[in-house]
Length: 304
Image 1: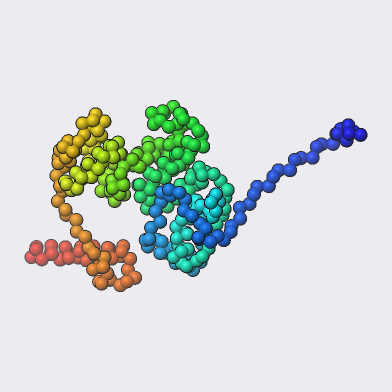
Image 2: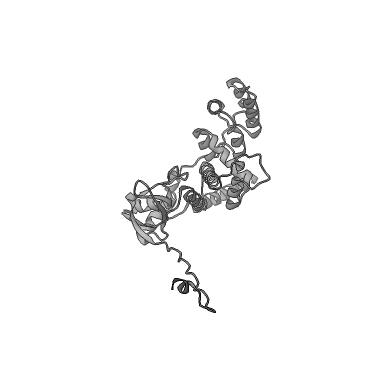
């Protein structure tokens, strides 16, 4: 009886196995108090004009694109994408926001977090550097390939090259940005403020933390930042153990303090001459048109 039941009927094809349906992600309203920032989130949430515009939009239309989060072991949810949207909701006085909850591990979440934020404008070099490093380390852990960690290996596809491919830049560019994470915070800020160029900053990143502190003292003393050639010489002296306060100061003294020819016009002083509806771009255009007219009149007066 059992054998007959087990036998297949001749000419009859077995029923196709049913494929499991992909789980559909659902958007849910979650209290802002239950949404926690991503650990070591590299991107700042700034209180700027763009944030104010986002808050006004949220107040009027709500959050149009749901945030993405994952469950936390300690309760609540860890934001993967949507830190700015959450803050805009807080400014708009909302108590909840729409969120897609996805149960993924930390490395997968890190990669999504970085990729979703790198599309933004006005990302600081230090933010980009930390983000690239976080993504590269996540990819390394996912692959568990120890032969990908050395920058000397070029024959095999490396995690930094993969990060570069995703970002549309070279692996060398990724490595240069990641080098910025070795700078002390004060020097990182100077790179963000464009007081130190990217290329010299990469060379400076090879200095020991105490040598970087010496450099900060020298920068303050000479009121000048190192050029590429100066940074390269400091790096070489550091590697040979010959860099000290005297050698660093002598290098920095080679660059004379430039004369300050910059003129700063206070926005508050200028605003009284223009309607409030005028944008900074419109104000700048009018100022230069007036200056052109003044210069032409002055030239006519001098030619008389």
